[in-house]
Length: 140
Image 1 (cartoon, rainbow, N blue to C red):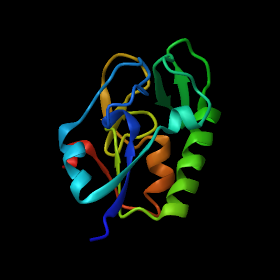
Image 2 (image 1 turned 180 degrees about the vertical axis):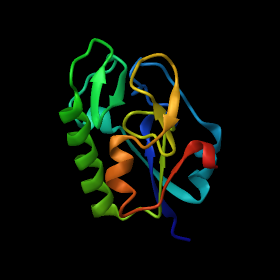
Image 3 (image 1 turned 90 degrees about the horizontal axis):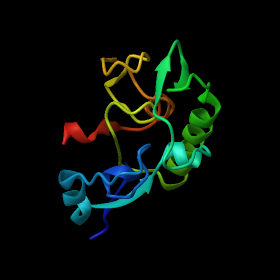
Image 4 (image 1 turned 135 degrees about the vertical axis):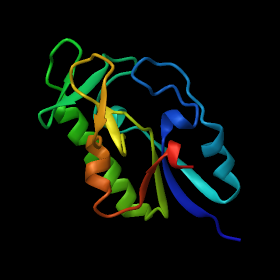
């Protein structure tokens, strides 16, 4: 039997790609490995950001880190890289990390670094959702 393909936020598979460098493994995502070939991607790393890195949030269509530095170009470069990967491998599904400034599917931080969340999509999700089925780990 041929497995379907899923692009997955690398952090959900236990890779230490989160902004804080901590591990986050999502058991429901890992449970899909019998049905899907799980391909990890981290748009922020692909865009050139290091791990660990300052937390970032979207404000007025731009991405800023917690020190006020505009890091939009890194997020856009990463989104374009993930889009290129997706176009090459044609995944059946993309599973991204909710509330991430790159990968948020339904919700992101409000841009004030206050912990408040608002409806919205991360940069990579906006690029990919036009062409692919993108869900968050919370949709599983």
